[in-house]
Image (tube, rainbow, N blue to C red; front, side):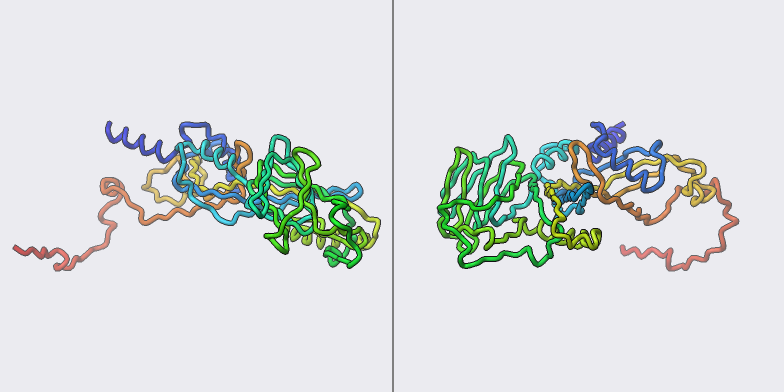
Length: 379
């Protein structure tokens, strides 16, 4: 009885999902069944060891392109730099663990160079820090002029929308300046700004790109709006700015431009060929773990054919899988599934089974060296 109770305690500690509905891993189980070409019926969850779970926060890039009546959607794979062990958990429940990392997932700090307009989503606010430790809070809009860099911390998601000419050559995305092509900064902003939407309450730090310690002139059009004014304002003829202030997005736009040139062919040279681009970058909580499943074995399974005739035929097969998932709401979406090969050190069987199934006449004669039976005893 004590042995039975002890085994049940160990089983509960090893398998934290037994006390909850394993619906959170249902998509993973269905994906495994599809990949292995198994019937979902007869495939059951067995174990998941919480102490071996690793997690991290990646990035998801999504590009929606529209030109004419054509709509294209490009999704880049999730990128995660590193995974770490979850040590400060307040519960042994796997569902609580997933909800905790999902609620705390934010993008890594990133910088954006003006000009652009930062807009906070409803219900979220921003705090802004200047080089001389001057700060402002409860901001909803931040208008950033040319030559000013903004560092963003704590964003859950960023998105931007832009219309442009698909026929522009790649070398026209640079910055051009003319000596007479600017106005004094007293004219504020002299061209429309690219809107960048941010989800999450973020902390911002502003500084001049070429001189981080320099003073930044600011203006408050309203209570929750601030303008960070440039030192000079370029006219349209003397200033052409790369429309994407984030480097990681610009690199992926360059890849898509090559694909679009191949897809569009000769139409790419038409100057009137306009389109729109919607870019979204989102924090992606990643969870890596090993999952054990129980699979019922039928009469025609290959596992039965691999066993000797004298062996008892099993009815359940237990298999381990290495799984990389992305947290989406209250579910885990599988990104990578790999079957773990079991390590079998030896095949053992009780001596009583050998006596009842195998005749000793089948064994060859064995001569044991006498020294192998010598006892070296020192009195």
